[in-house]
Image (cartoon, rainbow, N blue to C red):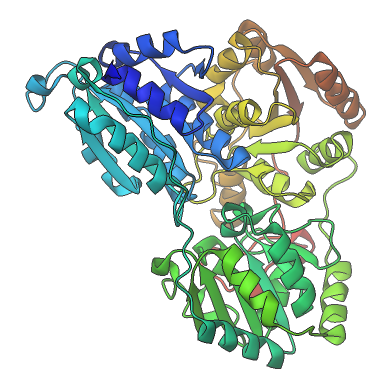
Length: 556
């Protein structure tokens, strides 16, 4: 059939099973928005308040569903406003297709109004970038973008389309979507080496990363942990890849990981890294990380093997497929003394907080109880993010969405909106600090405009809490530009943007506030006012080995 470029784009999105897109219109992309208008009963468009919000929403949609998220922006500043969201998705391996429209082909390279080389700008932060100058190339490009975004190690792909290519006509032939390519490059000999090492290990430890979520390896990880008879720790992005209520689970590893995880990994003789990249926030001093352990590293991306930590056995492949192969060959292992030692560490060093006052950990524990651990939690970046990782029990994958690699303040609200659109039957709650919330709080207008029932929690300590914590511990309390004790009333802001607002100042008010918010079934902001000097513990100083983890008791 003969269609214009914009109609071909919409048909290709429908081919790929896209039901929701997030974006903001402008001059260069008008033709595409006209086509979307005609197909509004098939593809829901969420008009965000800012293009960065659209990118974060597409990211949250992708993380919550496992599908490719889609965002749209016009040329120039519209396109550049996507950059932070694209970089966030790239660092955390999130499948996303960002579609931008540029000036018409004859105007390219002439510093035309709202012209920018967005493909050049985003080259370092995308898996691939396309510039579509001919309508005949558009359908194949869109199809390729989706395949690349979701294959191997997932990530964002940019498709920039000149305005004339969105208007010109050509023949369109429907096609079925191509399945994602699951890497199966590993050999039977590599599996045998892993099995041999595990069968001689006495103190194995499993270190779980975000790849366990991406590959859908939840059941395989659980089976593997039982077969190896090992404790399991996770990274920030690995949360939910293993049952957080399991006796084997020791909590997060790294800078704000538990003492049980950090000390346990430091004592183990075999560390099995599953879909993790040995981030600096996890390993601390690389020369003293898991010094007594043989390292097994399984990852879909060959570039990660031996990049930060040298592996004794490195296997490249889809984690789900690799674990299935291992689980078929590995005999049941038993390490009762090691498991007892880890249990003793967990009992000796539990996570603690001040219980005589309102605090973020108390708020998060209350959310856990009220939602029965079934909510999707999104976060911004800082102390509240670490507390959300520590004190909510994640038992299923795709229930904790946070910016790990880039550490993007302002990520959570857009991501929460995207998650709710992708999982409408789930309770979706974003937890932000007051500093993060100020960055993209305009997206509350998006939630109210579309009546998206999310709960926005603002942990208000009137400071940039994590930076202040570092200033307290390492900069002799020189609080340079971290005090936010301004006259901004976040409840009034929320109400002005069309949302219900609730302020909480005591522990007794927390549970009723969340029960009311859930009953309202609309966009709600809950502001929780906490002391300015609460700190996230445990903690490992930057560059120190994770065995030197300390907490408030150690400081005393």
